[in-house]
Amino acid sequence: MRTESGMLDASQLAVNALSHPVIMVDGEGMIIFANAEAEDFFRSSAAMLARHRLSDFVPFGSPLLTLVDQVRERSAPFNEYRVDISSPRLGQDRIVDIYVAPVAEAPDSAVIMFLERSMAEKIDRQMTHRGAARSVTGLAAMLAHEIKNPLSGIRGAAQLLENVVSDEDRGLARLITEETDRIVALVDRMEVFSDERPVDSMPVNIHVVLDHVKAIAQNGFARDISFTEEYDPSLPPILANRDQLVQVFINLIKNAAEAIGNTVGGEIRLSTAFRPGIRFSVPGTRERVSLPMEFCVHDNGPGVSEDIRSMIFDPFITTKQNGSGLGLALVAKIVGAHGGVIECDSTARGTTFRILMPAWREQEANGAKRNKAASTA
Image (cartoon, rainbow, N blue to C red):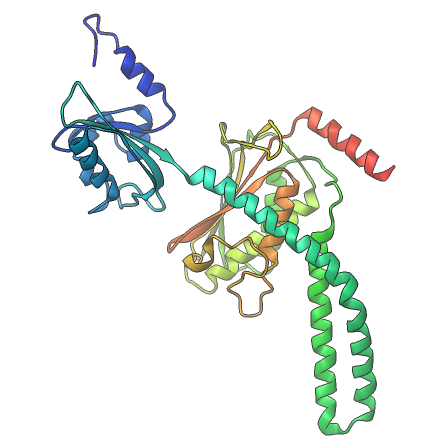
């Protein structure tokens, strides 16, 4: 697709400028064109792609192949949404929207554009997690007011009974006391969700936080697990509450350690990176927030069950026998209060918790100070 002067054709320049993968296949299904994004998407160069059919990259019987056949038969464009094209070549969890159109100048050929849904769905799920956290906020306030007072009366009555009943029944009275204490402890944990005060923030070096949490883990619950770090030392600070970030990463690393258990070769990898271009709209406003700071906690455990993967940040969702299911819900609340999002990617080879947060800017710090002053006035 070059002109006589040797310059790239304007149409190819335009297609290469698109931020979505675009390929063109001929009547035999051979890939005859791929833009730069398609090379990344298919993990192959354009020259390598030109040696293969589209069917070499997608699963057998994929709806994508059927869609291309329909376009050829009817000479009309078609869309398909939420198509799973996961394969050994393309990787896991490749869910895309597909647009296929015929090429008038090349009979039986078709142009295919892929729109990856992963980031959009992550943001959508994050909004759902925040909504669930808000529901727990209301529930926590109600529980604290309506349940803890009666529980104290039940506990007091059980203690009195323990002193007057027979030895045979004393165990039952003690059981009432213990179960009452357990419920009070659960309500106390839920009360954290009802704290809606502005975050007391300052510029924080995330690597200092991660090193501190790693030291705690290696001297306690993760002493038998090896740690590796993949840090970007050039990262700017983030505007955050250091203690709350410590709580977030202790929770995530403890979950990772519990997932690994006694598995030989257990490893937790901590990574930081700068990912420009990740932006999303704030509901109810025209503001678009940039979240270039990426912090990950990865383990090589057995992964999260697919049954609960999409609900893992919802309250009371847990796989632990004695777990309350509030730990990750609290993590999502803290990250959301800092203007960030958190997502979980999990396969049978391990789990990655990924946090995306805004970078610190001086004007944000000044705004946080003003908010703090106003809240304490």
